[in-house]
Amino acid sequence: MLMFDSLNRHLLPPYSPEARVHAPNFSRLARQGVTFDHSYVCSMPCMPARRDLHTGRPNFLHRSWGPLEPFDDSVMRMLGDAGVYTHLASDHDHYWQDGGATYHGRYHSWQFIRGQEGDPHIGQVEDPPIPWNINATPRRADWVNRQHIKCESDIPQTQLLNAGLDFIVRNHASDRWFLQLEFFDPHEPFVADQKFKDLYPSDYSGPLFDWPPYDSVNETPEEVDEARRNYAALTSQCDASLGAVLDAMDRYGLWGDTMLIVWADHGYSLGEHGCWAKNWMPLYEEVAHTPFFMYDPRGKTAGERRSALVQPAIDLGPTLLDYFEVPLARDMTGQALRSVIEEDAPVRDAAIFGYHGDRINVTDGRYVYMRYPLDKPYFEYTLMPTKKAGFLEIESLRRAELVDGFSFTKGVPVLKIPASGKPPAKHQPKKHMLFDLQKDPKQKTPLDDLKIEERMVKHMQSLMKALEAPTELYARMGFPESGNS
Image (cartoon, helix red, strand yellow):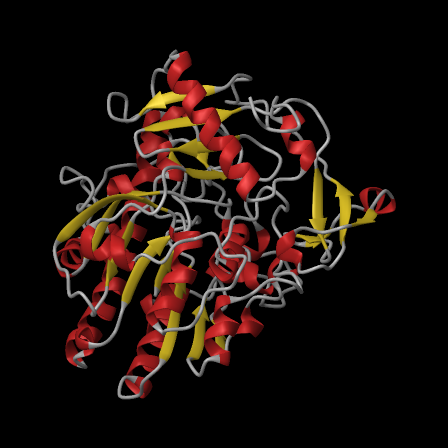
């Protein structure tokens, strides 16, 4: 399984033939396997998506960014218990922060490549040299790390690719193994080897711009184009890494009995809707609608597309268990995708997705409905009171209660901790929004159709019930507590 972080679907040739990103290996992958046209995120962003992957169920209704919980059924641990050797190779530094520190231990073995983004792995007291002409707030650790990238082999993505290929070389003749090769790229900063930057020549002479802010677009058109060029170059480097894995599949004859999964946890906004990045704007298509490809040797379906609505974050866990003939955990709500791959059989009528405490979103594949929350309390339900990098606030912990859990906590009580924070004000229309993706794929004009909105609300309420959404979320979303209207 190859994972990419912040990979844009609409820039890849299999999804947008007119895309100007050089990515021939994604096209090669599409010819070899199945391309999913309606793949959506679930819990956002990075570590919430990975908790979904391990547990096969959404977690954003109950918890923000955090680690696996003691009561969580980890797919990787379940595979291991069934005799499948699991290995994680990643350069995603969030695994080793407080809010992600329980994931890697669920694998038999794991390998971490250091140096991405602000990974603080090199001890340096003196400040690093930072270009004066930089259009971004510099991250100190990032510029410490960049000092040590002298050539392509020093780039974390290259080191990670080599680690993954090394696993395949050593283990391709063995049976019952799972490799999760997880690339942080093309997540910002958009640092690519020069040969990939040369694919996108430019006479740009402005400030260095390879790390857009999580904010509105306030840059010049030339600077916006420069950020997009740098993102395209890094995407092309990701494509080359994919190509090396496809070459290994060819070289060792793995297509006969090896499943290949390629997906992204979410996309990235490159100026669409006047926004950079993710996390603070509504979950528009450029972030929520993701690239997803699979090859399943059981069906050997090649070069075909599937229209069924899928959510790889929660569906891949059940799919892996099904592939290795391991029973699914009782609490999993994701769906094994074999029937989708073989015959495009639908596995859900609607998909729910979002950030903890922000809008709740639902799609049926054609319409997307975004429901804005009221200013009412919401809570973290957890036994692991950490956030991305640190602990939940002491003031919130002082007001925590130990309460009965949910069916998926297996009879274990949990801490109910007051959550802090409101949806960002910028680019957050304080109203519900409905879009018809067939007629308005770029979501420029919200649709005013009460009948369709009522149908999408019913989908949302039904999924909230099925997922045991906390009672207070109904009031926060403007629903009766029963969720019946």
